[in-house]
Length: 331
Ligand SMILES: C[S@@+](CC[C@H](N)C(=O)[O-])C[C@H]1O[C@@H](n2cnc3c(N)ncnc32)[C@H](O)[C@@H]1O
Image 1 (cartoon, rainbow, N blue to C red):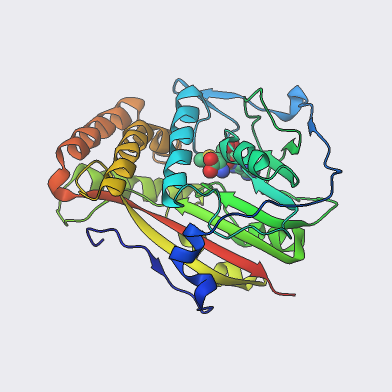
Image 2 (cartoon, rainbow, N blue to C red):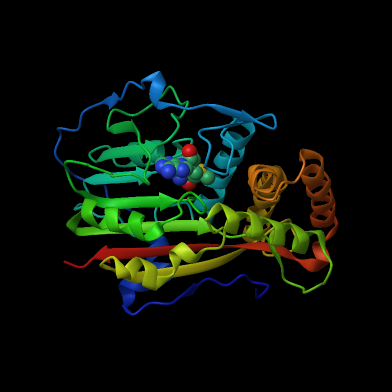
């Protein structure tokens, strides 16, 4: 990572439309759409929702690796703020125009993004899905919630103009299937936007760190679980194989802590530090105990060592990479 954490665009669609400055500075147009979007949150049959308590954490099912309890919700809300900073306050990287009417957000989580989108685009119709209901009581009328496992058949009757897939690294064993379904669910001129943040790394190479141990164990456990926590699902060929054409790609290194002296990076870094310290255990607890047979104490000891290392490791310059890909349907 360069210390400025410079964002790079790698695209085969050059021109002013594709300049980051233009994208970030542009005003997002109000969406004008039909007025027929219905206000509803689906009633959630209790049978459709699993609740698994494991190692003092609550999970939505037996397979997804992250817990969904209160501390995880707080962390997810801070992550939402980090994404907003990455996008200079915008909710999407791709400029949303008046042609975007139906929006799908899979694995919506706390609903922070979906609610903000529904409020910013009151004429759009936003459908969100997750395996767990979000808790917000205050939901805009143009937002509909569905409990749905995105690794199964999507089965939406109507197509979407824009599909948002954020923070779902590790949620699916088969990303080709997700992109295949997204392709089927997209309108002829539809887009998908995929955003994710990778594992913590140090800018300065140093052997024998707690981070090295943590990342290695996490990768090993993820491999046994049949998932990847690296950002392979953002690779162009996987997305394009299903028929999409990637036309915007961005990578941004987010400093963890305040070692990057650029004020906007430092403020991002403070939030990143909170989510990383809070998330170390959430991220690895189920994976290491279930797939590598670690005890909860072994997990806690490694996480404590790593927390201390990160807090004292300004010289190692910890960071994590955020990647964003926008692809359009090629019919
Ligand atoms: C890390 S959170 C990200 C939430 C949200 N997209 C965001 O960026 O704030 C991942 C979410 O994906 C959901 N999830 C995991 N596996 C899923 C699946 N198979 N189908 C639908 N949602 C899933 C989880 O319940 C969780 O709410």
